[in-house]
Image (cartoon, rainbow, N blue to C red; front, side, top):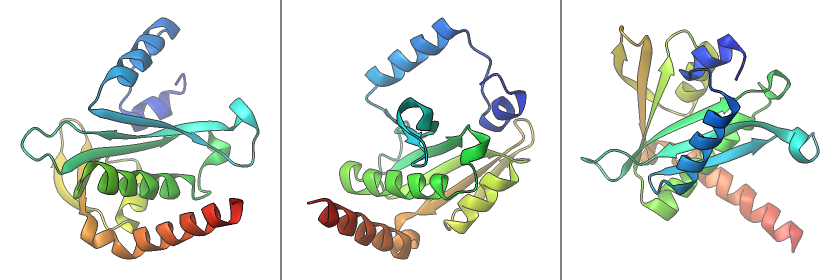
Length: 163
C-alpha cells in the first residue's frame, strides 16, 4: 500500500505497520465484514498473495444488500481473471450463505479497469459523487444467474475432480 496509485484506486490512507495490524484485527472480529485474501495460483505460499475481496454488511435499511470491493494489488496478477472469479465467488457466498440479493460497489471514477469489470458483471450506475470522485454501481443477483450458474458448475466439477 505504499504505491500512491493503489491508495488512490482503493481510497486508502497510508498506514504504519502497527495501524495495518490493528485494522486487520478489527476486521477479523467484525461480524459485518467478510474479508478474504486473493492468491495468484501461479505462485507458491505467501508469494501468491495478490490482493483481497471484501463484503461489507452495513446497510441497516436493507439487510439483503452488501457492499463489495476487490483489490488486486500485485501488478503481475492483474488482468488474469482473478478479480472476476473472486467477485463471483464472493457474491455466490453472499447470496447462498448470507441471503444477499443485491451488491453495491463504489469505484473511483478514474479507475477504468474496475469500472469495466463491474459493468461486465452487469452492475449499473446508480449514483455519482463529484466530491469523492467515485461512481456507485449496483447489481441484483437475478442479473448474474448465468455467471453464477457457470461458476457453480465449475466449482462442483473441480470439487468432484479432487475426490
